Amino acid sequence: MLARILVPVRGDGMSETVLAHAAAAAHRHKAHVVVAHCRAKPDDMIPYSTLLPRFARDTILSQAAELADQEETALRASLHELAGALDLTETDSPDGSRATVQFVEEFGRMAHVIKHNGRLADLVVVAKPDRDRNLGTNVLKTALFQTGRPVLMCPRGRPVAEGFGRHVTVAWNGSLEAARSVALTLDVVAGAETVTILAVGAGELHGATAEELRDYYALRGVAADVLHFEAKKPGLALMEKTREIGADLLVMGAYGHSHERETIFGGNTQSVVDTAEFPVLLAH
Image 1 (cartoon, rainbow, N blue to C red):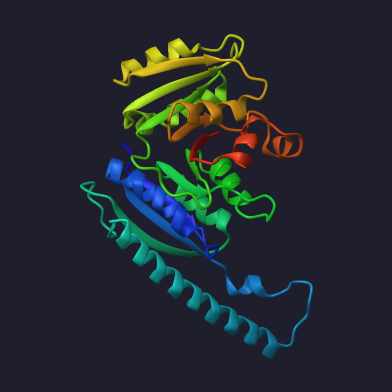
Image 2: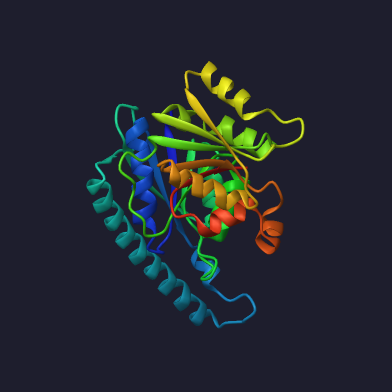
């Protein structure tokens, strides 16, 4: 069962989408959502390559602090209203009896906030990156590569599906990344009503089969079906099959090759990250 869900936020307008998906997972598992706001340090606003008079430096620092206060106040008010609409109880002392939420603010860079809070979270929830506008890529990358936790990537501007998490597909090819995704998402998969294992092609040489994964789940009380298919572009095919069978969440291993290599040359994970229109649960 999920107990702690991290939602890193900043003033980019994506809080509503991300928190809505986190809330859906929290209600299913009676989990506690930690909304962590990254607040830039005023000193980071000072251009390092420019020498400034003392009064100019003090003015910039004062204005930066005032602007950060205004942003933080507005964001807290917005998140407070959104939490109420999502039926999340605000508390700093969750007891696991209901879905709850807590707002924290930390100074520093977003990567540091995610690392600090993410390594003791059961799930990190982020927005789907927008590479054209260079939004969210570093957040997803940090969550995947620096926390060791599964990351739920939410599509931008998409409402939460009714009964979100009820039907889950699990991508399987016998690889190390697929095995880690299975191990890290057992609670999510166990909480689903229907589980379908998507096996693309012959799988990795000497890797476990989809049928063996089905037996592994059965030992944990999870009944899963297996769907075999062939595809020239496995990443795109996984999403297509997930839509075809009516599932609302795809679980998959992420970046068998490096993030940089897949970003430049393409890859299964990158194709999913770039084109997903429904939530995808990734693990590296």
